Length: 371
Image (cartoon, rainbow, N blue to C red; front, side):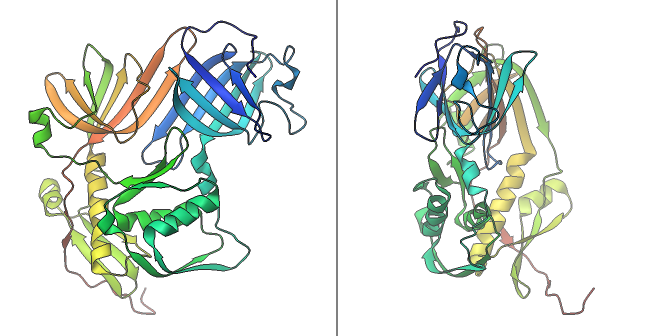
């Protein structure tokens, strides 16, 4: 069903809402504003859709006192721009503004399904001799996300010998611990597919000079309307203790970051799956790479939105004669019926993916009774 009431919009976009009975309703004319926000470090993307309150003409638009209605908590929602899927999610809440005669529909992508305890009606879940990728698949399927797709370094996959998790641990936390040892990350794609992928795209510093291996080119005064650049040291920790158990740990350093900072900055992290030195080193390398990525930030406002832009894409940027390659880590897309379609893009610096965590020295075994 398509609602025919409302104004004629200036852009090719639409919102589809699917209720619990699989009935689909398409909203076009009553849509006033759409904002989609996705971040590489956030477990879910969000979307806010503002529509005209036309309940007087469409009684089934919502039912504030009951559980039915086109706009209802738990109904699924899809957003398209230029006939390309941009968001697949669930309505978490909606707000009715009687004075403005509008409805704010607030949504999370389907990744929110995994932000729940593992539960299962038992005190503990024990995983024995299961591949790391299979454990991720099991959690995704249990959460209702379907079978994930994998694009990782296959040699990093390994058998988990023994992992015990309490019933109230979030499924997302279990997956995160596995990802740390796989040098991978997971996210929900625009179409709702759950994907596990390499932590960073392949990159070499020579790519910039050779003008290769990038997805989009953004140039100031042409595509970029506004830009802001920052380098900060608050995210840099060049010495990290990765602890699996009280007496099973290693400390690692990134020599290049030590030289860059001029001093050592220490942090400890736990790794329930880091039962070998190799796994702990992978955890440390990922930690250092994240530190470097977050050290160089560029925020730009594109004068024209791009429905093909996505997290993890590589963007070649020219700003004041400075040229570099950056990874897309955040996109805030906003569009309105008057034709405004803007992307606010967050980008982080690129670094060649190498084993940058070097084994250090230190005794961090805690004795019982020590303060």
